[in-house]
Image (cartoon, rainbow, N blue to C red; front, top):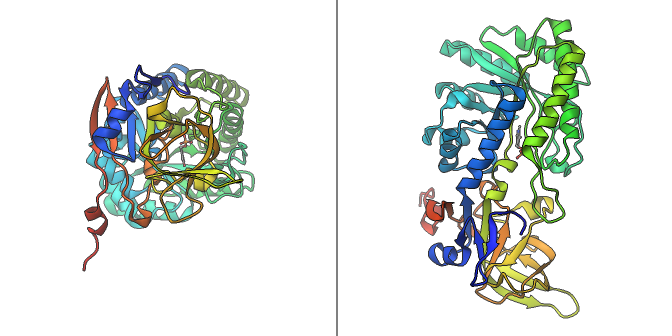
Amino acid sequence: MLHDNLSINQLGHLTFAGVDTVDMAKKYGTPLMLIDENRIRQRVRTYVGAMKKYFGEDAAPLYASKALCFKGIYKIVAEEGMSVDIVSPGELYTAAQAGFPLKKAYFHGNNKTDEDIAYGMDLGIGYFISDGYEEIDSIDRIAGEKGIKQRVLLRLTPGIDPHTNAKISTGKVDCKFGTPIETGQAEKYIAYTLTKQNIELMGFHCHIGSQVFDTEPFCDAADIMIKYIAHIEKALGYHASILNLGGGIGVRYVESDPYIDIDENLRLVSEHIKMRCEEFGVKMPTILMEPGRSTVADSGMTLYTVGTVKSINDYKSYVSVDGGMTDNPRYTLYGSKYTMMVANKANQPADFKCTIGGRCCESGDLLAEDIYIQKPQRNDLLAVFVTGAYNYSMASNYNRIGRPPIVIIKDGADRLAVRRETFEDMVLRELD
Ligand SMILES: *Cc1c(COP(=O)(O)O)cnc(C)c1O
């Protein structure tokens, strides 16, 4: 099995986090998202522990909460002592509703409105990660109006191409995010920020991209950033006390993806950073990282009911399920690959080649093409693995298809954490 929270029981049913997935589908209906709470906690502990062990007591991982955002996840993360990164006032509101300690929240995004900034300050958010002059002006002005001094990191682009999907690559000079180091613009931006009375500049941030399997791009980014911190000390007399290296550690979606040892990865990156700090003569900054996908992806799984199974003579077979791009747009967006199986026939051979379609009125609404699964028929259950990240959080109700519920499994017990979106929910905001 792809991950050790997946197995097959005596009935030949797929189990997830120790529960029979067929039972879960009967109890809650489909499409259904299952979340393995113990695994998320284990992942968070790995990150929190490894960051402290390798980078020192102040180092911290921030959960990039855009990967999977609902109140329950902020509670889990808060209990485990992890900080969070949020990218919108909606995420911030959700974190606040969950009672997340917002001093440990970092407000990201390449276009925060003045309302967003004021809202963040009113809720007492710890840090803003500013992306551009306009934001610096607004943060300074609004902090002044509120009589506070706001802590800020600046998002810079180190000019790294991590060789991942172009749509999730964010560290290159030509990118909507960040201010480039290479062109000299970052230095002006830092100098400008340092003139602001109501801003306490804490350091720099970079994020190179997502689904990165190698440590090399992180080490390359660290090289550039440490060297740059040394340069800025000389040029501007400013020492960055925080360096946030962003997220991006890869996740195993299919057999051919490598397994990543997070602890070992962080150890390697830390050795590298220590070496560069010595080389460039800078005091090691407090290191932050922002794992999103790798915190939650393999703690999630989606169950669908199979509807139509259509074989087109001389072409291929289409298996249609009762969800699709509405609950998982990643295949449509990026061509992302997933591992799937017929959950109630898990011990049968996966010898049926097919393309999995969703139920939307779009021929591009697919979840996989030309994959092998057990031969399905109507009312069988299709399980899609590793859907914890960027599925629920990217879900829509296109075609007025309701978003699935989230059921959390902990120590073999299931509980409904987010209910299914109803027809009534869909017309709730419509006034006549
Ligand atoms: C998306 C994002 C992350 C999380 O990336 P993952 O690949 O999910 O770990 C972290 N930081 C920033 C700024 C992001 O945009």
